[in-house]
Length: 346
Image (cartoon, rainbow, N blue to C red; front, side):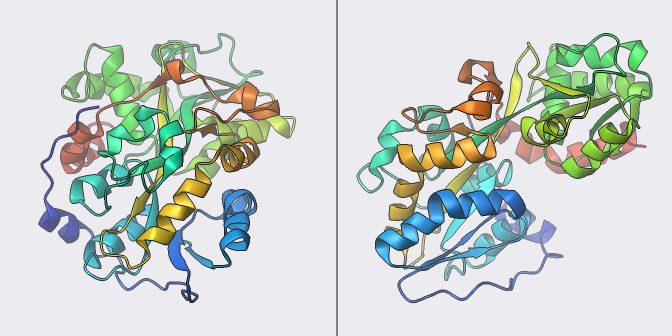
């Protein structure tokens, strides 16, 4: 994956000025460190599979900060000289922004031996300044009782039979940048040529009931039948409906699934770098990866880890995934947002 080096720290901080910089952080216990975590079921499984065993093994406390990725990234940018957060756990695109901004220190197998077992695609794309914990894939969820011709590819979203029955993410929501790139690829474009994507989405507009603001919003629309198809959602919320007995099916498009993942970034000036790296090594171990990924139904980055049960059935193989060049998309985000609001959402 090629990533452009151009990144304006001034532009980023200007855009983030409306966010709270002095975040309310959990107290850092003596001998411990502060990191970030997503809430809900994800946090519960993360603590059970990774954090608790690490704390017990080393006798330290891992203080976990809830919040949003944009808040964490802003905090890391503003407080880079004296980090308040020792280790950031970030999703796309904030993870790539962090790398481009130079927030994280270099990671290596010498300090984190289990990196040797991590597939290169989950390490090299971060310039080896971060490493992936797990991955999920974006696909299409649909109501089996409301769709006569099941979608098998991204291009099937344009079927006239789906007029007013589709929802896609609003710009800025997870999956929205991926939606634009996927649309561009259906018409011969790519990350460097998004014009075909905008044209395709304008043509898709009659099929779009409304744009969703998050996975909960999208699944509620699908559950109630307000829409028949949810485009660019991960497998996790879709299978929550399926497991509850709803007439829903989730498919990874045959032309490739966009990938989502979270990665570890150790703050360059943290005094707790060694402990953070020990934690990453623990999280990347075969045992921790299997426990966590099987619990949350996600793909492990450690090639030795094996999925079982529902995870084995629902997590796509690496060859089904389509990474794209975030380095080409990120510099365009402001322009893309304006254009989306004018041409697609307007």
